[in-house]
Image 1 (cartoon, helix red, strand yellow):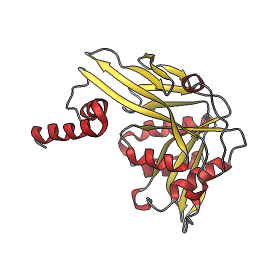
Image 2: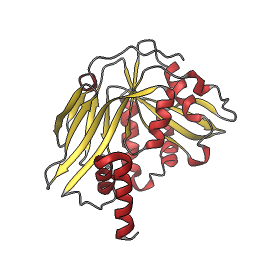
Image 3: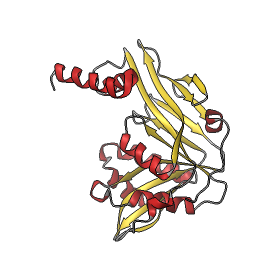
Image 4: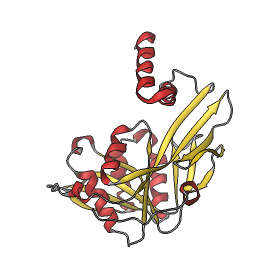
Length: 250
């Protein structure tokens, strides 16, 4: 793409989402060198009230359930992460070791979609857990949805709402459900909002003039605050503040 077209698209993004979105896109595409400036934003969502209308569409031809550690190979095959297979295998094994559940949809004998239900901790990253990562820690009554995927051939068939509903039914009353979504992933953000998720905080990974990567966080009632440098750890409850009890019915 020519420089003129790139600049033109950045101007369009500037009009659509302001300076931050234009800068974030420029960083992700290498238009702005990462050593000079870097910005990546992630929204943390909490489920306030599950929209049961989203699950009225019947899920024909699929079976919902959970995967076990013996099926990690199938999960990796679904991600297409062959080039970083060892790292992904270790990550998924850690999820199981920490008590995580992997809710899946099967078509015949094949896993075609999954969504992790994670306990205790979740690491947010956009560079494969190398230099840009922030660990969220949370209480036993919190479940964090992360690293979900639906095979492209099976998308837009109503699988995602059913996966979430199945996961909710697996936990008791008083459980709080969260997830995190890149600010630029508009499709996933919209899908979660339709189910009843709302943004409770925004995390930003930043870098300026060759500094170490640092994280800041912002909530609806607080301005931006420093989360830490390098690979910091944050308590999810402290990040969000006062929680509301979830209502898991329409």
